[in-house]
Image 1 (spheres, rainbow, N blue to C red):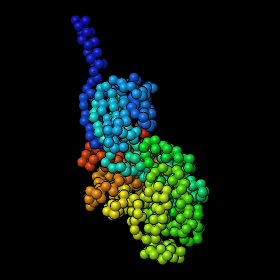
Image 2 (image 1 turned 45 degrees about the vertical axis):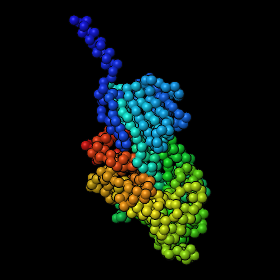
Image 3 (image 1 turned 90 degrees about the vertical axis):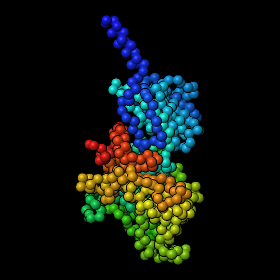
Image 4 (image 1 turned 180 degrees about the horizontal axis):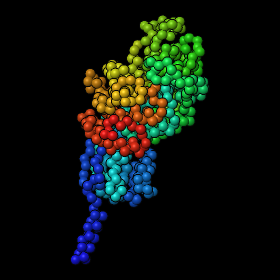
Length: 534
Ligand code: ACM
């Protein structure tokens, strides 16, 4: 009897080893939700003998990332094998022209292994981001990847996150973490807002005072700028050297993220005037701003100012490979131009109607310079006032109106309306939150955003390149605060921009975020908890 029992037990153990349990340890939760996914029975178990098999000539850094990730999970030094295929125990990365779209990818996994296909390394990189979310740990501590078929591709080509480093300055390591978060969400653009009234943050070799003077303010307003006259008396500042900028651009590029630099003009330039008062319409002196808001002292549209800006942009273009360069152009009060004889003479000489047309003249000149250097201009929607430059892309922030108008005029548009995309707004009752700029934008509202306005017909809608979340940092002194304000609203926007509109389901998103947050936890991200039951 004991013998029979032993045999039965041995058979049982052998069976258990040979055919892994079909039951998955947990649900399959992916953010942003893929275009198509079907789930099969069983899973692939990752082990020390798993081989990373690559097919194709230029997979860039992706095999290295896959190895790093799975080495980390298994504690082993997994082999990367080029060429000859493997019948079992593989994670295969394959460049396959048949997968349409440069960001698209396909995953098929079974008990034998996992195969990722894409036409570019960029697509394979997104395949890896999905695999990280597919991996589950069973009760014995094994890592398993469910058997699935996924076909995925983004809805929009531009999926961006912005960060204002002018109001507050964040270290290089945090900028890299922000880029990692962008990558995790399959977003592809980091809009780096580098200059502000309160601080110029990028080294420009030809104009050293921009950072010697313009990167530092003597103190900062305490409380809400709209009703406070109190200042902290603490000098504040910092800037990124060109070497650091190169390092960040490379870091982003290695994660298939374009860094879109923004150099503000003609407004939001008080830090420039503190360093070089000769670019103002009135003699200075000026100081780097110490409170928040829209400042009246702006760049004067003189030839000297244009030469200065061209020199600055020349250095910027050498640092940033981005096809687009953002020149701000928002919130430029016209008071100084109205008072300036030079500006008024220029209005007459150029046959302009008013100061709004003067701003258009300003932007057009900069656009001509950028276009001559094979770059395209992006500006906030104020560039519509006084007439749009011929090739400009409009970033629509004061609602969707500017974006609608620009698309109707046949211009490219990036949607970033305050109503859905301003992550500096409160995300819960202000009574329970730290001081913020104002507004109210909970996660669910971000999730409900539809970037194509109903007013546009199919042809016009093609001009909507995508959308972006903006993180203005007047009230975000620390990088931990930035994380709290950006997440999980960024996750909601990532799904808006990546996934098909008809796949959206807020409750399901929240449920999936219950799993996704583990990735944020692993990165030690201080995300806001409102949507979770804790
Ligand atoms: C902006 O929020 N001033 C673009």
